[in-house]
Image (cartoon, rainbow, N blue to C red; front, side, top):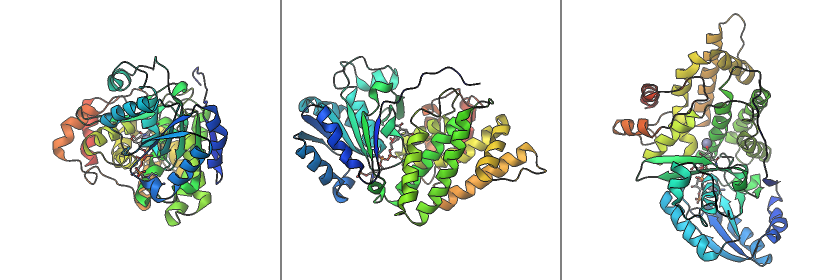
Length: 388
Ligand code: NZQ
Ligand code: ZN
């Protein structure tokens, strides 16, 4: 049965080859000072930076820059960004990049006018902002996180060995996002594939929960089929616009809060992956891929019927004459084969994790209670151990 919910997604999207023109519609809505936030320089190499700055100038904006947002943005960088935004008296924060840049922009946006320590308030105590929030807009260049249309913001604190995400309420969602699939063509294959798995994991972690008949589960099966189909094409030919645009759109729907409405959700693959990243700083989607099989094999006995449904509806497993358990296992086998085929990292050793990190990673794993099994420390240790 669908639980009770409210649903609101205020982000306006501009999608397609001309999407950047959307900036001309959006920029006049905000004051003169724009803080342009970006990463390590990919946007300078591929020309997106020049295009964005030209539009900002044409709209009469004062452009202030905050560059060097790293993948898995850190709390130190966040504190630097807060100071930069203050100095610029930013009226709009324009994030041009992937999930890291968009997440970071949101974290800065809720912290500039906040008197509290941002890390403690938002990422340890999970409080909502009580101060004025600076509006954020995004120009997306890397596909996977869904950050372009959600309130998620993930920050890493290396000193505390924690990588933590806060899912903020709607006021923190980007006001608008520009999504041109061609902007993702310059992504290295490793990043593209990592993003594809991030999308898949977002869907699966909302799918593997509950025993009710829920519309969202049917939507998610459709999204998964589309994703697998397009991923196969994109891996063969990264410049296939049709496949890349479908992947981009699937990413948004995977995590713009819609499919979670009215149902419980799991999220343990992300909690495990984030603990691995807190120790290794590895690429987000790869941390998820590396713990996925051990985790799903571990919880399969607690949710066998759903795993069997997944096998049939997503992986076309023929159920005839087989037990639910056999069907469910065949589904995971098909998924594992596909994951290896598209080039995902299937163990945490390859990501730099060592046995000495195990105790710490177990402690850094937050426990969620919406999946088929509420994990205890022993369970988490077993899954991580299996992930080496
Ligand atoms: O920094 P630059 O030079 O731009 O390079 C980036 C970076 O090295 C590069 N890149 C991005 N667009 C490119 C490009 N290279 C060439 N051409 C382009 N068009 O790709 C690298 C990775 O970028 P990043 O933004 O880190 O990737 P992603 O989008 O996967 O974001 C990862 C972050 O998002 C968080 C993750 O935890 C991680 O911190 N997440 C955010 C979520 C949310 N907001 O809801 C949910 C996700 O589960 C995730 O946790
Ligand atoms: Zn993710």
